[in-house]
Length: 229
Image (tube, rainbow, N blue to C red; front, side):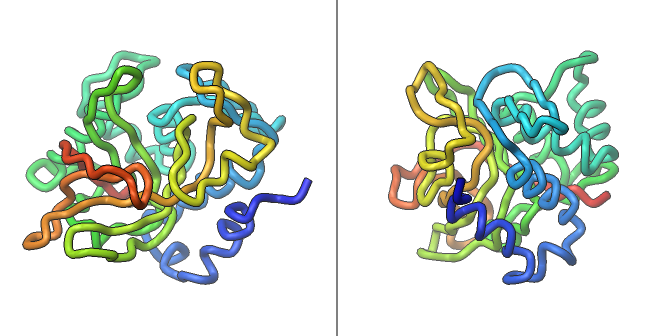
């Protein structure tokens, strides 16, 4: 099977941008790339089932982020686990990640650096927001590219995430490795796509998101963090 265009772009991204290899968050970026390029099947579901040998990756957005953190940035993961007071076997929700990131400036945590401005995002950073819908309480992604400013308050960026709702220029709709999610009838699971993050024009602080580059702008609590181990 011919790999989707997004897969080809992902394989060459580091050499095109360079910063992904130098950034302290590069290990998490490389973990996301490794999962995406090695996977043979993926599915969006609310239970983490990963078989790296078989190339099978089944999880939802925060399960993907949490699994990747445990693999590539264990100190950062332990900090989240302790700070959020999670019971054994539990993972943070999107609002919980967002609250953790919001606290980093005043309460630094081992393995993390706060990222407050959209322009400062780097590949491997984690962004999470709190926005309740009928099926979700928010979302979490791993940044896959340097942000590109397209308006005073808007920055386009590629992201790796686990979802059944594609972003712009998304890999999933044409990726035969992505299995159909029964609820939406769409190909789902781990993929890469382009969305927009909104920011305060005066301060540059993150204020919300657009799921696709031309989608509706959603203002909501949103935060970002950079694993440093």
